Image 1 (cartoon, rainbow, N blue to C red):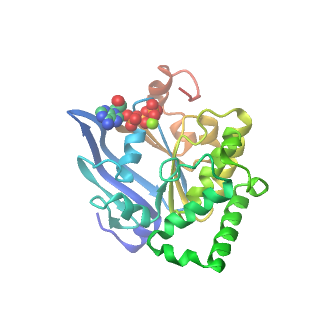
Image 2: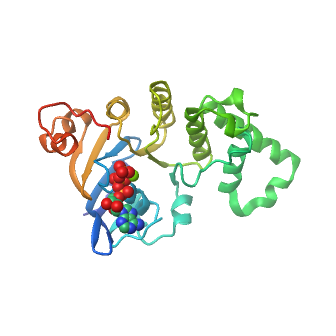
Length: 263
Ligand SMILES: Nc1ncnc2c1ncn2[C@@H]1O[C@H](COP(=O)(O)OP(=O)(O)OP(=O)(O)O)[C@@H](O)[C@H]1O
Ligand SMILES: [Mg+2]
């Protein structure tokens, strides 16, 4: 394929034949994934379909057995996880695990400091510390947590913790955010709140998310890729994918209903 300028600006992430084998078992099988810049792209599929493994390959948490990964037109297949993170591919709920006994503000500040990594000495001055705090407050405001800045993280309800994790991920300045089941284990209210939050923080960024909740997907996902037994079963917008008989079969074991999702 020709990597023309137009193509590169359209597509932020592209995999070709991405494959991961574990001792002869193929968890991810020849996956061609194409994520459009600025979109919310959902990766769905039954339990064990290979979604999380796919994420682990994209961040190089796992080494692909074969295939390639391109980010912004550059082949990153052989790059180290830290290098990929520096490029702006940031996975939430992994790099951004929060410290339960720190305040919310401290957690976001740690995220900001981590991104700056080696230039630690820069933060020794009072002025730079207060700049760090004000940026951390901005990020907390972006996820609606500014009033809780000085609370201890462990005291937060579950949904708010997830919002904080999004703030600490934003601190890493992601260009592509990978969210693995961001609404997992939440009640309706928190699901709605986090769904809207994801929509909000998607502005100016690209989001690739694994999600089981079809309501969340139908509300915010621009495109969906369905995995089954490691391979791509279908790809397209929700309206199209949800009517695909093979997809309904894979999910429901039936072809007579709408795609309702969940486990
Ligand atoms: N490190 C590993 N070693 C061996 N097999 C693995 C490993 N990691 C994952 N697998 C297998 O690969 C398959 C895909 O797993 P994966 O976790 O990617 O699925 P998933 O789509 O994320 O499922 P879920 O919806 O349950 O999170 C599963 O059969 C799993 O048992
Ligand atoms: Mg998973």
